[in-house]
Image (tube, rainbow, N blue to C red):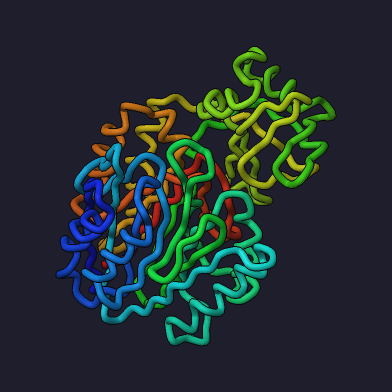
Length: 387
């Protein structure tokens, strides 16, 4: 039987914070791994060392989270730092955790980490599912490298984040800390797993063909028109609302979506900057000759979608849940602002008393139905593990 517990701390001392949070997990039986999410304020090596001392032999994986975490204990944040941990235990489950700074290119690094994770689990076969955390920027290529080794295996996870979008993020395992790289946890089990990957936005009738892209993440033209001009036409925004970094906040309730080939999934592309040449920088890869769709959603909907998505995750699991791992976009969290306690209430009610941890990321990974693993932004990637 899978068992899980969460622990948190906002102690300003990273060693004491790690100790306090980890002590709440010491009675997790047959602990096989722990997710760790923390504030950039901490010395992460000291934090992880303190956690490892309390949970000897338990592999750790995680990253810095945007402004806080949510567990079954509520929203946890602190000016001097914060940490949330969730340990999973199951005598019948094997887990391999591995990570690496970027070495060579992102794809090669992903390949290397996948091989190492299988070795750590004592396996020579692909896992049943896996968690991935990567630094923002090349998530798709880390994922390609992992898939070279294990094929199309269900993935969940998100990108490391900081509090100010200034590149202070790090990702880590119990063996390494890096601002640029990738880490994974490979899970081997016969128990059920479910993931719901969604932006939970409403599709509008406004769409156009992406006719020019540069460097994967700069949409230059839509329908042959400068992309920012087309976006302003769709939304009615004025230039002063969407120029430069102002677009990042404006687009939280009006992002761009792209559909997978069968239309089962709309992956959100978060417009992050309106450039001087009227191009749009986005947070995930875009492709020419695909359709960009204007999406819409209110702050109220951003909040209520969390509870609804967790309920959907429980239904999709189709068995009693032992834990939930919830990846929530940091941009959405910024749009929600000081109403974040409403999200915590939504999740606590929908969890039905099952332990869960929520991190806030700068990119989210998941899949829908039989589609391939996908990277997006402004999304939710909610995962359930059978008890």
